Image 1 (tube, helix red, strand yellow):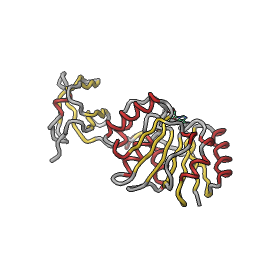
Image 2 (spheres, rainbow, N blue to C red):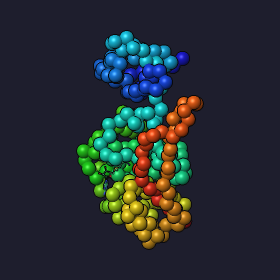
Image 3 (cartoon, helix red, strand yellow):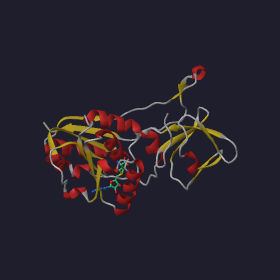
Image 4 (cartoon, rainbow, N blue to C red):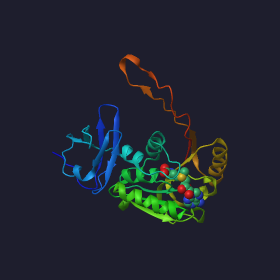
Length: 254
Ligand SMILES: C[S@@+](CC[C@H](N)C(=O)[O-])C[C@H]1O[C@@H](n2cnc3c(N)ncnc32)[C@H](O)[C@@H]1O
Protein backbone atom coordinates (compact mmCIF):
# COMPACT_ATOMS: atom_id res chain seq x y z
CA UNK A 1 0.00 0.00 0.00
CA UNK A 2 1.54 3.34 -1.07
CA UNK A 3 0.74 6.61 0.58
CA UNK A 4 1.38 10.22 -0.39
CA UNK A 5 4.27 11.98 1.37
CA UNK A 6 4.86 15.71 1.61
CA UNK A 7 6.85 16.79 -1.47
CA UNK A 8 5.54 13.96 -3.69
CA UNK A 9 3.90 14.68 -7.03
CA UNK A 10 0.40 13.36 -7.56
CA UNK A 11 -2.09 13.41 -10.38
CA UNK A 12 -5.69 14.05 -9.40
CA UNK A 13 -8.15 12.46 -11.80
CA UNK A 14 -11.76 13.46 -12.25
CA UNK A 15 -13.50 10.92 -14.45
CA UNK A 16 -11.58 9.86 -17.55
CA UNK A 17 -10.72 13.17 -19.11
CA UNK A 18 -9.85 15.70 -16.44
CA UNK A 19 -6.59 15.57 -14.53
CA UNK A 20 -4.32 17.88 -12.55
CA UNK A 21 -0.74 17.20 -11.55
CA UNK A 22 0.53 18.91 -8.43
CA UNK A 23 3.42 18.69 -6.00
CA UNK A 24 2.15 18.15 -2.47
CA UNK A 25 3.55 21.22 -0.74
CA UNK A 26 2.01 21.43 2.75
CA UNK A 27 0.35 24.75 3.52
CA UNK A 28 -0.64 25.36 -0.10
CA UNK A 29 -4.10 25.30 -1.60
CA UNK A 30 -4.63 23.81 -5.07
CA UNK A 31 -7.42 25.16 -7.26
CA UNK A 32 -9.31 23.09 -9.83
CA UNK A 33 -12.37 23.96 -11.90
CA UNK A 34 -14.28 21.89 -9.33
CA UNK A 35 -13.18 23.65 -6.18
CA UNK A 36 -9.95 23.62 -4.20
CA UNK A 37 -8.04 21.12 -2.10
CA UNK A 38 -5.81 21.98 0.87
CA UNK A 39 -2.65 20.05 -0.02
CA UNK A 40 -2.01 19.14 3.65
CA UNK A 41 -5.02 16.87 3.33
CA UNK A 42 -3.22 14.76 0.71
CA UNK A 43 -0.35 13.79 3.01
CA UNK A 44 -0.83 10.20 4.17
CA UNK A 45 -3.63 9.51 1.68
CA UNK A 46 -3.44 6.09 0.02
CA UNK A 47 -2.75 6.17 -3.74
CA UNK A 48 -5.89 5.10 -5.56
CA UNK A 49 -8.25 6.55 -2.98
CA UNK A 50 -10.17 9.79 -3.49
CA UNK A 51 -10.21 13.25 -1.94
CA UNK A 52 -12.98 15.84 -1.90
CA UNK A 53 -12.67 19.48 -2.94
CA UNK A 54 -14.27 22.23 -0.82
CA UNK A 55 -17.43 21.90 -2.94
CA UNK A 56 -17.68 18.12 -2.54
CA UNK A 57 -16.29 17.00 -5.92
CA UNK A 58 -14.14 13.84 -5.68
CA UNK A 59 -10.76 13.33 -7.35
CA UNK A 60 -8.85 10.03 -7.43
CA UNK A 61 -5.25 10.45 -6.20
CA UNK A 62 -2.61 8.74 -8.31
CA UNK A 63 1.15 8.93 -8.77
CA UNK A 64 2.35 11.38 -11.43
CA UNK A 65 4.43 10.36 -14.45
CA UNK A 66 7.55 12.27 -15.55
CA UNK A 67 5.68 13.84 -18.47
CA UNK A 68 2.82 14.96 -16.23
CA UNK A 69 5.30 16.55 -13.85
CA UNK A 70 7.21 18.32 -16.64
CA UNK A 71 4.03 19.70 -18.17
CA UNK A 72 3.02 21.07 -14.74
CA UNK A 73 6.24 23.04 -14.25
CA UNK A 74 6.38 26.78 -14.65
CA UNK A 75 7.61 27.42 -18.21
CA UNK A 76 9.65 30.52 -18.95
CA UNK A 77 11.16 29.48 -22.31
CA UNK A 78 10.20 27.34 -25.26
CA UNK A 79 10.61 23.72 -24.22
CA UNK A 80 11.27 20.44 -25.97
CA UNK A 81 8.08 18.38 -25.95
CA UNK A 82 7.76 14.66 -25.16
CA UNK A 83 7.61 13.47 -28.77
CA UNK A 84 11.02 15.03 -29.48
CA UNK A 85 12.45 14.26 -26.03
CA UNK A 86 11.67 10.58 -26.50
CA UNK A 87 13.41 10.40 -29.88
CA UNK A 88 16.43 12.36 -28.68
CA UNK A 89 16.78 10.14 -25.66
CA UNK A 90 16.56 6.82 -27.48
CA UNK A 91 18.82 7.84 -30.36
CA UNK A 92 21.48 9.21 -28.00
CA UNK A 93 21.89 5.86 -26.26
CA UNK A 94 21.78 7.66 -22.93
CA UNK A 95 20.91 5.47 -19.96
CA UNK A 96 21.82 4.83 -16.32
CA UNK A 97 25.42 5.97 -15.74
CA UNK A 98 25.72 8.18 -18.84
CA UNK A 99 27.39 11.57 -18.69
CA UNK A 100 25.59 14.16 -20.80
CA UNK A 101 26.19 17.84 -21.51
CA UNK A 102 23.32 20.04 -22.65
CA UNK A 103 22.62 23.71 -23.39
CA UNK A 104 20.73 25.99 -22.94
CA UNK A 105 18.99 24.87 -19.84
CA UNK A 106 15.89 27.06 -20.37
CA UNK A 107 12.93 25.71 -18.38
CA UNK A 108 14.84 22.45 -17.93
CA UNK A 109 12.59 19.93 -19.70
CA UNK A 110 15.48 18.31 -21.57
CA UNK A 111 17.93 18.43 -18.64
CA UNK A 112 15.34 16.95 -16.28
CA UNK A 113 14.42 14.18 -18.72
CA UNK A 114 18.07 13.28 -19.18
CA UNK A 115 18.63 13.32 -15.41
CA UNK A 116 15.68 11.00 -14.90
CA UNK A 117 17.23 8.44 -17.26
CA UNK A 118 20.91 8.70 -16.26
CA UNK A 119 20.04 7.99 -12.62
CA UNK A 120 21.38 6.69 -10.29
CA UNK A 121 25.03 6.90 -11.33
CA UNK A 122 25.07 9.30 -14.31
CA UNK A 123 25.21 13.08 -14.48
CA UNK A 124 23.81 15.88 -16.61
CA UNK A 125 25.82 19.09 -17.01
CA UNK A 126 23.63 21.93 -18.22
CA UNK A 127 24.59 25.48 -19.27
CA UNK A 128 22.37 28.57 -19.18
CA UNK A 129 23.55 32.07 -20.04
CA UNK A 130 20.73 33.94 -18.27
CA UNK A 131 20.99 34.12 -14.49
CA UNK A 132 17.21 34.40 -13.98
CA UNK A 133 16.56 31.32 -16.13
CA UNK A 134 19.38 29.41 -14.43
CA UNK A 135 17.84 30.11 -11.02
CA UNK A 136 14.30 29.22 -12.09
CA UNK A 137 15.55 25.99 -13.71
CA UNK A 138 17.30 25.06 -10.45
CA UNK A 139 13.97 25.48 -8.69
CA UNK A 140 12.35 23.17 -11.23
CA UNK A 141 15.07 20.52 -10.75
CA UNK A 142 14.63 20.70 -6.97
CA UNK A 143 10.86 20.44 -7.29
CA UNK A 144 11.30 17.30 -9.41
CA UNK A 145 13.78 15.81 -6.92
CA UNK A 146 16.39 15.49 -9.68
CA UNK A 147 18.92 18.10 -8.51
CA UNK A 148 21.51 15.56 -7.35
CA UNK A 149 21.88 14.25 -10.91
CA UNK A 150 22.24 17.70 -12.51
CA UNK A 151 25.14 20.15 -12.41
CA UNK A 152 23.67 23.46 -13.60
CA UNK A 153 25.99 26.24 -14.69
CA UNK A 154 25.20 29.90 -15.26
CA UNK A 155 27.59 30.20 -18.18
CA UNK A 156 27.70 31.11 -21.87
CA UNK A 157 28.35 27.84 -23.62
CA UNK A 158 30.22 29.65 -26.41
CA UNK A 159 33.10 29.85 -23.91
CA UNK A 160 33.30 26.06 -24.15
CA UNK A 161 32.30 22.98 -22.15
CA UNK A 162 34.28 22.09 -19.02
CA UNK A 163 33.56 18.36 -19.38
CA UNK A 164 35.53 15.83 -21.41
CA UNK A 165 34.88 12.28 -22.57
CA UNK A 166 31.10 12.69 -22.37
CA UNK A 167 28.61 10.23 -23.87
CA UNK A 168 26.31 12.79 -25.48
CA UNK A 169 25.92 16.51 -26.10
CA UNK A 170 22.47 17.99 -26.67
CA UNK A 171 21.91 21.55 -27.86
CA UNK A 172 18.73 23.62 -27.87
CA UNK A 173 20.14 27.07 -28.59
CA UNK A 174 19.40 29.80 -31.14
CA UNK A 175 22.90 29.36 -32.69
CA UNK A 176 24.04 25.77 -32.08
CA UNK A 177 26.54 25.96 -34.97
CA UNK A 178 28.70 28.28 -32.85
CA UNK A 179 29.46 25.48 -30.34
CA UNK A 180 29.49 22.36 -32.52
CA UNK A 181 33.32 22.23 -32.60
CA UNK A 182 33.41 22.54 -28.79
CA UNK A 183 30.87 19.72 -28.52
CA UNK A 184 33.11 17.57 -30.71
CA UNK A 185 36.08 18.21 -28.42
CA UNK A 186 34.00 17.34 -25.34
CA UNK A 187 32.63 14.04 -26.66
CA UNK A 188 34.19 10.63 -26.16
CA UNK A 189 34.84 8.52 -29.26
CA UNK A 190 31.46 7.13 -30.34
CA UNK A 191 29.65 9.96 -28.58
CA UNK A 192 26.47 11.42 -30.03
CA UNK A 193 25.44 15.02 -30.65
CA UNK A 194 21.76 15.91 -30.90
CA UNK A 195 20.64 19.38 -31.86
CA UNK A 196 17.08 20.67 -31.70
CA UNK A 197 16.16 23.72 -33.83
CA UNK A 198 12.77 25.08 -34.91
CA UNK A 199 13.65 26.37 -38.42
CA UNK A 200 15.22 25.02 -41.62
CA UNK A 201 17.82 27.81 -42.00
CA UNK A 202 19.11 26.76 -38.56
CA UNK A 203 19.26 23.15 -39.78
CA UNK A 204 21.39 24.20 -42.76
CA UNK A 205 23.88 26.13 -40.67
CA UNK A 206 24.10 23.34 -38.11
CA UNK A 207 24.67 20.72 -40.82
CA UNK A 208 27.56 22.72 -42.28
CA UNK A 209 29.12 23.11 -38.84
CA UNK A 210 28.73 19.40 -38.06
CA UNK A 211 30.45 18.40 -41.31
CA UNK A 212 33.24 20.94 -40.75
CA UNK A 213 33.87 19.66 -37.22
CA UNK A 214 34.21 16.05 -38.39
CA UNK A 215 30.92 14.52 -37.20
CA UNK A 216 29.84 11.38 -39.08
CA UNK A 217 26.52 9.54 -39.56
CA UNK A 218 24.73 12.87 -39.75
CA UNK A 219 20.93 12.71 -39.94
CA UNK A 220 18.06 15.19 -39.87
CA UNK A 221 14.59 14.16 -38.75
CA UNK A 222 11.28 15.72 -37.91
CA UNK A 223 9.00 13.77 -35.61
CA UNK A 224 5.36 13.89 -36.70
CA UNK A 225 2.80 13.17 -34.02
CA UNK A 226 -0.87 12.79 -34.87
CA UNK A 227 -3.31 12.48 -32.03
CA UNK A 228 -6.53 10.55 -32.46
CA UNK A 229 -9.86 10.90 -30.80
CA UNK A 230 -9.81 7.84 -28.56
CA UNK A 231 -13.50 6.99 -28.85
CA UNK A 232 -14.20 3.57 -30.37
CA UNK A 233 -17.27 4.81 -32.24
CA UNK A 234 -15.64 8.06 -33.42
CA UNK A 235 -12.05 6.99 -33.99
CA UNK A 236 -10.38 9.62 -36.19
CA UNK A 237 -7.60 12.24 -35.99
CA UNK A 238 -8.22 15.16 -33.63
CA UNK A 239 -9.43 18.28 -35.46
CA UNK A 240 -6.84 20.60 -33.90
CA UNK A 241 -3.24 19.77 -33.04
CA UNK A 242 0.33 21.07 -32.85
CA UNK A 243 1.60 21.45 -36.41
CA UNK A 244 5.28 22.02 -35.78
CA UNK A 245 7.86 21.85 -33.00
CA UNK A 246 11.31 21.50 -34.56
CA UNK A 247 13.97 19.44 -36.32
CA UNK A 248 16.43 17.07 -34.71
CA UNK A 249 19.92 16.83 -36.15
CA UNK A 250 22.16 14.01 -35.07
CA UNK A 251 25.84 13.20 -35.56
CA UNK A 252 28.50 10.90 -34.11
CA UNK A 253 32.13 11.32 -33.24
CA UNK A 254 33.72 8.27 -34.92
C1 LIG B 1 14.66 27.09 -26.02
S1 LIG B 1 15.47 27.33 -24.50
C2 LIG B 1 15.94 25.70 -24.02
C3 LIG B 1 14.77 24.89 -23.50
C4 LIG B 1 15.16 23.56 -22.92
N1 LIG B 1 15.79 22.71 -23.90
C5 LIG B 1 13.95 22.86 -22.34
O1 LIG B 1 13.58 21.77 -22.86
O2 LIG B 1 13.35 23.36 -21.38
C6 LIG B 1 17.01 28.01 -24.99
C7 LIG B 1 17.83 28.50 -23.81
O3 LIG B 1 19.18 28.69 -24.23
C8 LIG B 1 19.70 29.78 -23.53
N2 LIG B 1 20.90 30.24 -24.26
C9 LIG B 1 20.94 30.93 -25.44
N3 LIG B 1 22.22 31.12 -25.80
C10 LIG B 1 23.00 30.51 -24.86
C11 LIG B 1 24.41 30.37 -24.69
N4 LIG B 1 25.27 30.87 -25.58
N5 LIG B 1 24.86 29.68 -23.60
C12 LIG B 1 23.99 29.17 -22.70
N6 LIG B 1 22.66 29.29 -22.81
C13 LIG B 1 22.15 29.95 -23.86
C14 LIG B 1 18.54 30.78 -23.51
O4 LIG B 1 18.70 31.75 -22.50
C15 LIG B 1 17.36 29.85 -23.25
O5 LIG B 1 17.09 29.72 -21.89
